[in-house]
Every structure is written in structure tokens, then in C-alpha cells.
Image 1 (cartoon, rainbow, N blue to C red):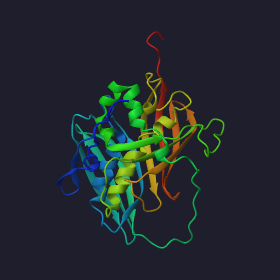
Image 2: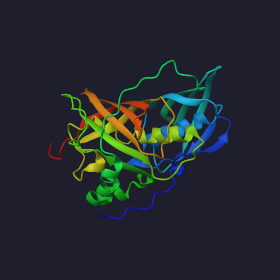
Image 3: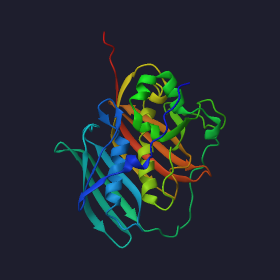
Image 4: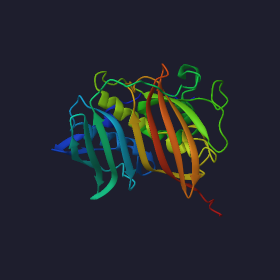
Length: 296
């Protein structure tokens, strides 16, 4: 098994520079060859929008559209619009611009905490804990060392895939592939900054959600050595944050894909902490096209 590089500080992936009021600049690593990782673009957009909001208000939802692939070799400028500041809620729109063109548009809503009227949630499946599972990046480094070496940004986190035959997994409905992955940042995050943890979870949420739509065609990138069978790209992404959490502690990402058609796939995800608390939900639509063989 290959030795893994030491993780770089995860906070470096969220760092942006303030250029002027409501104007920020950042850089994103590649998620695929010559394409900036969409989860980092969304996380930096949330960082930019969150910097213009009263810290007492925490993000509770975000919605984004990926318009063009970002270039990881060039900086990205984030333009923030302050759409609303009400007594309880605040709304921000962020446009990520590169080369004079919008590559990502994003809106986020923030609110002040308030007492719950009566809480409920779906129960987390009793899956094996992360300590019992293989390190996904160690497996990836061993099976696809060249691919692994080109994606240094992912070295700032940890992942453990739950095997499909693990005890406790709910049965997979016909036509609805599913996967369960433990995740966390590879380095500690500030304990007293909910925005940082929300941005980190936004980054994590984009790692395996689109690949869930293609599980009927191929294994996720981190678990296979064979070439891609499909073209995958995030089209839009939405998240809802339900309860406080820490992204530098293990969270379970329960994902399923109820539909694939018309060159698109839909995936739903739920995040749980180690105590089984549902902390966030995510939905993503992805471009999903089978690749033709060179002779096809």
C-alpha cells in the first residue's frame, strides 16, 4: 500500500482574499483534469457570502448552478449581492466569475437560531463505524497511483466507504442505487466558527453525490482502477443545514439516486453525526452520459 502524503490544512481550501466590499478572490484545485472541483467553488462562494452576514446568523440553505467548468490554474472572483437583511433571515447571492464569465451562481439563506417547535428526523442506519473500514485514499493510491497523485486537493480529507454487503444497511430498492460513506476533514477546524464547518461540509457534499447517479454503471472513482465508463459533471447543487455539527469529526453521508434519464442523474444525500443526529441534507442533479469506446 502506498504511503499517503500528509494532509494540508483544510482551511487552506476555503481561504479567499477580500478585494473590496462584496468582492473576493480565491483559487480552487482540480477535481477532474483541467476542471476546478465544484465542491470547493461552492464552499468558497459560501465563505464569501457568509463574510457579509452577521455571525449570529448561520446558513440554513444554499442553492447553486454550475454554468461552466472552472480552470484550476486561474483565480476565481466571487461577487456578493446583499439581497435581504430581515429581522431573522438574511439572503445573499454570489456569482463566481473567471475570465469575465460566470462559472457558478449561488444563493444562500442565513438565520438566527430559535427554539424548535418539536423535533423529528429519519433514523440513521446502523452501519459499521469508520474505524472498521478501509481508508478510501489508501485504496485509491494503491489501485490508481497516477490518478491519485494528480488530485492533491483531496489529500486534506478522510473517507471510508461502507461495503454494500455490510450488516445494518437498509435494502436497496429496485432502481435506486445507494452508497454510504464516512467523511471528515483531514485537519482540525476552529470550534467556534459554524460558517467554516458549513463551508467544509459543502465541500465534502460534492465528492460522491454525482457518482451515486452512476453506480449502476461503474464504481466511484475512489474505488476503481478501470477507466471512466461515463461522463459526470455537477449541474446544480442544494443543501439544507438542520442542526449544529463539526465537519472535522466523522459524519456519515447516506446517498441514493432515484432517477437517471435524459443524460441526467438525480442524487439525494443525508449527513449524520456519530450520535445518529441528522445534521444536513443535499440534492444534486448531474450530467450523466455513457462514454463511447474509441472504436464505437
